[in-house]
Length: 78
Image 1 (spheres, rainbow, N blue to C red):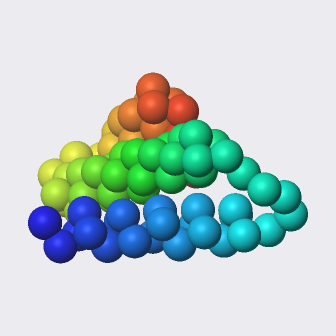
Image 2 (cartoon, rainbow, N blue to C red; image 1 turned 45 degrees about the horizontal axis):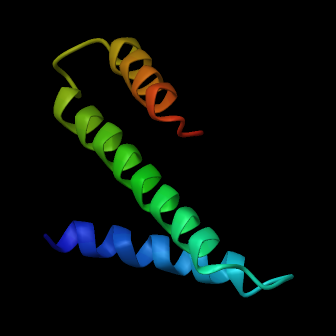
């Protein structure tokens, strides 16, 4: 899936930017950060996609609430 590849690249870029900074990082720290960032991007993408499909079908406050709960469930910040 092309979108998954794009999200993986975004996660890789964010990870590289963070870890090329102030100190040496272990491979486990690097992988944990990448995995977390990639999962976070997928959750956000799912919420965004849900909003696109729900637009005009339900009251926006309902999908805003649902997105908030999904992000809370996965520990994703806005």
